[in-house]
Image (cartoon, rainbow over all chains, first blue to last red; front, side, top):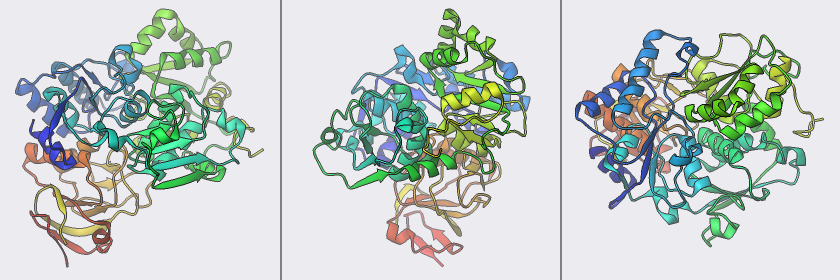
Length: 404
Length: 134
């Protein structure tokens, strides 16, 4: 409760309000401080008071053989994951709890979520309400069942103050591709920082997987906890609604050259030339939904990942169970894909050591993997990634970026 | 100069002015204090023992853990000076104080004040949020 009151002071809240759910990120091992903290909670007999999901941990508990690092670190990571279960948290171990039907908050629900992509998704795509919570405060809110009445829990703070529009020079092929969303997300994060932005001029009814990729990238390059996409997100049926009837502080046109620069920043210098060899392809950051696993299985049907390439798909253990039950997981494995749960391939030594670059369709993976695991990265659309995985060489769709 | 106190404490050290926002998770190695974000122009500098001027934070909610772990390992910044209140960092410092009895002051200052702190200047932070640049 002391931490929740501290948070209220920082945020300038006058009261606390109840929450219905929490999503806790603190279960990922970052050193002994993370263990020291949870041991104090366990020793004190603490329990969460609302349904609480857990974010990714250090290792895949269902496939521990995929961990290729120091066994002592794996042990500490495992211990931390276990301690959060003892507090009464549900062992979901996913960064995309919104893809679990029974953990998905409804419109307007007040929750305490951590994990930057999940925060952006809950606020933006679901219309649930959470402030940008981080480690320690997430579980403190889950135990007390209370949050400060401040920030994005309040209607007025959810108003867009910045409007982004795609310039007319952005090609139709790119507008229709999944590759637009992580790249636009990087631009959104840079332009918005901590502000709430509205993106205008995209076709209505954008699939939630694309909004997931947009938000994850925006929460990597910036501190974006909420965005609106006019015609797609629930608090933005119109631009006027997203602006809550007021004028924006700033409007900005995103040109093709700004998008290309953001895309180029996601590929390590010197990597990614068409036809150059890759060592691995990593998809599923944030965790792939069951729909995405089916889509990837469909795209790979009849082909096989090149012998010297590792194709790693990260997903939630619940989604994997569903994919196993319906045969999708088997189809993926038959095509040469490996499935990783409970963690993510950029958090620790999971990928086979290789001097060759790793290709990904995730803006977030591309952003963090060089610093976290020292990987050289090639960013591409999902179709580019899958075809490259099969051929073992970087394949580029020449129509996508208007660079033919 | 005086700032709003997000985390109280006394500290002094050389100013390190970050030219771009930094996420401590993925950006700071808590075991060494080194800036490791491949996208950051100041990659490779050490934050350990410095009074770090951060125009704004960004990114991951794991930054609270990374800050607490940097305190535990003895490689944390001496103080953080921000332009905007940041809950994640404030909580990281609060937990570190609770677990290890180490105070890491975090202040929020006006942009106009922050921009007056030159790189390398010796900065003294007081418990009341006062700031002296010498």
